[in-house]
Image 1 (tube, rainbow, N blue to C red):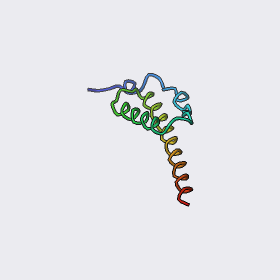
Image 2: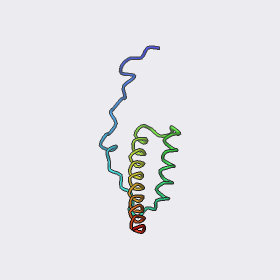
Image 3: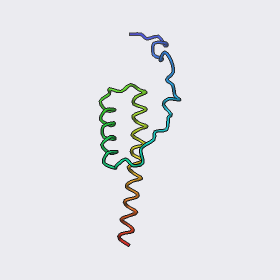
Image 4: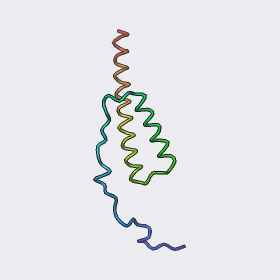
Length: 85
């Protein structure tokens, strides 16, 4: 089957401004809650049920959740170092 070039191109460009929104995570979110949400996002993304824009937003949310979890773990590690000293 032969495709014309315009058939392979999207009708309009996605709104990149919308996709580049900085995701805010509640600083009081518990580690377990953040991990649970991150696992759900990963599962949903792997299922293929998201559009491209939704996948990008889910990725950004997941990256913010991961950063939140890493920060919490760093704080706990620091507390453990203090207790061990």
